[in-house]
Amino acid sequence: QYGKDELLNISVGIDRGVVTPFQLSDGRRFDYSQTQKDRLKASERRKKHYQRMMARRIKGSSNWKKAKEKARRCSRYAAYVRRDFAHKTSHAIVGNESVEIIGIEDLKIKSMTARPEPKKFEDEEFLPNGANAKAGLNKAILEKAWGLTERFIEYKAQRAGKLIIKVPAPYTSQTCSRCGCQAKTNRKSQALFRCTHCGFTQNADRNAAEVIKAKAVELFHSEGIKPKEVRRTMRLRHKPACASA
Ligand SMILES: [Zn+2]
Image (tube, rainbow, N blue to C red; front, side):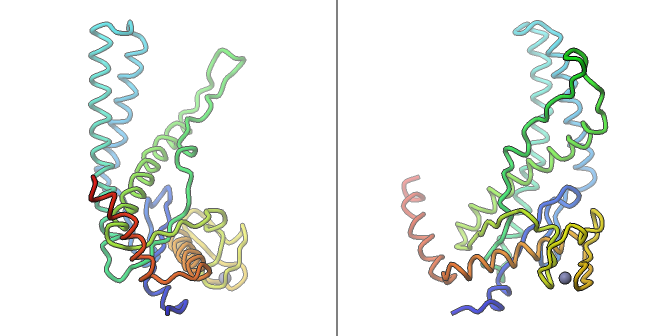
């Protein structure tokens, strides 16, 4: 029923990155505002401050409890901002009426956000790693929104009868969306993609989003399922669950 070109017309690919949290193959991009970014970072720093304070105080004491409550308040603001961003982003992606298939990388976010091993020096002292800590903080904030937005996209897509296809993540950033050539040297910098084979040049995130879209269509096409069929089976499978809830 659907040819590959038609499938490409009703599909969108999503690339998640550290600079741009969400870049779509159709050119749209979603990011926190600068104010939100600053406030997220500030609240994360304040939370760490109160957590250190807790560590110095006697566990369970009234002063310890005061510090704990303050740390909790910092987390609450950050959670609210991320949630708001995740809802707006997922709504904009799923709400696009010309899109029936959404391709996204299959990232193992839980293991990615796992706390890195602290650098130990002679088993006693810790080496300072301020730059790493700062980069890690920014990344951790983004990864939380990646996971949350993905969950929101999933349930909103299900509700709208749209299909999500998770594609394998490796090499999406090194592959050319025009000729399919894959090489490490294709990625010139964080921002720039230039294919060493065909010379195709594009914003690196946008290229990756297009590769993800093509991979999703490829997977869908090779499975031999038609969008209409999928919609019906998805509705049937999930209706009883909704009715009982
Ligand atoms: Zn190429």
